[in-house]
Length: 279
Image (cartoon, rainbow, N blue to C red; front, side, top):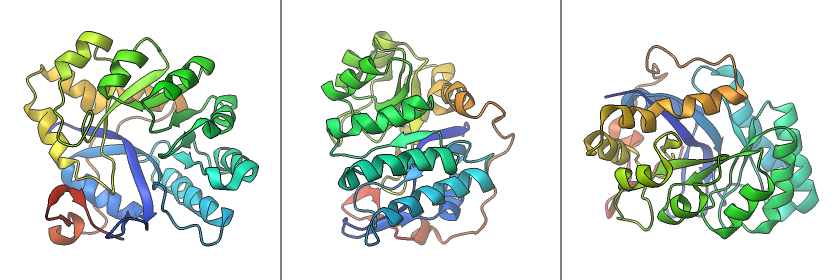
């Protein structure tokens, strides 16, 4: 299998799903070792992560990403800080702290995202940061327009491709499904609308068994250059913008631990692409 670089790796735990789901930095590396993922842009988990200690929990989650970037920079070249609406202005200050103190490259927001996110984007934009807001709707278009010098990662949905392609500061992640669950990726259709230079692969751990998506890419009726671009080539200049010294490693990750596959890839029996591991 060709190398992959993941633009969408979560580390941490989400506790409002049944069952709970999560992964550690080391478990992430073990999964990558088995699937030829050479590196990843990492970020904390989605809404539902623990906040029993308030803003301290948000800080802790961002520190975890900061340590991954610091200690395993060849594999986690850049990280994003989670933003949280429930803490208001204190949350904005915390995002600024995470970017400045923990060496993170920007921010990540999780649904439901509304215009409360704009002051957080401003924090990232002031530091020339990267933003993944999990948005592909008119609000994302508005934000791309008012922050023209800030880089954004958006889901490569049909709506996003049709409406956001004109913005040079938007990158499109191939993650899970293009639209509703079960919809099929049409890479030729996407290329005809926005070209092939801004499509990037997203694994979306610890929620999704991205091996399904890797098979879709490998078996797609597109040329090898296009597959390479989605899998790893296109995201390299985006990473290098925030970490100019980073070079893609020559070899895959060596797993720090060999897991039982039934533990590492445990899934929902009714939705076998949905992981159920809580680490």
